[in-house]
Amino acid sequence: MSDGAMDKLKGKGKEAVGKLTGDQRKEAEGKADQAKGGAKETAEGLGDRAKGVTDSLRRDDDK
Image 1 (tube, rainbow, N blue to C red):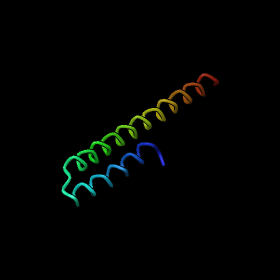
Image 2: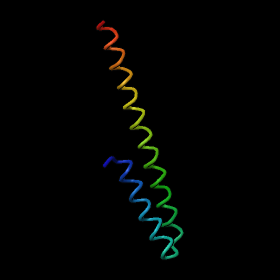
Image 3: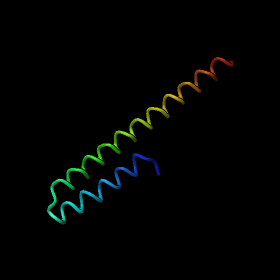
Image 4: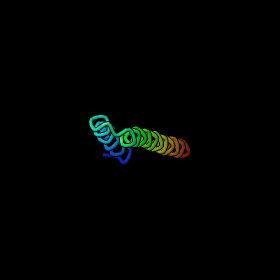
């Protein structure tokens, strides 16, 4: 499981606990963790795409 997915999961848990206990701060922390996880997943995806483009360009140079 990626760091981003872990942050999102942790955030969902915090948000749920915050809702159950009425702790608005914990709920907000959970939402923030989920947003951070989404950003990490996006960054990871962009890194993978960049690597794919680089690999593709290298293969084209070999021809």
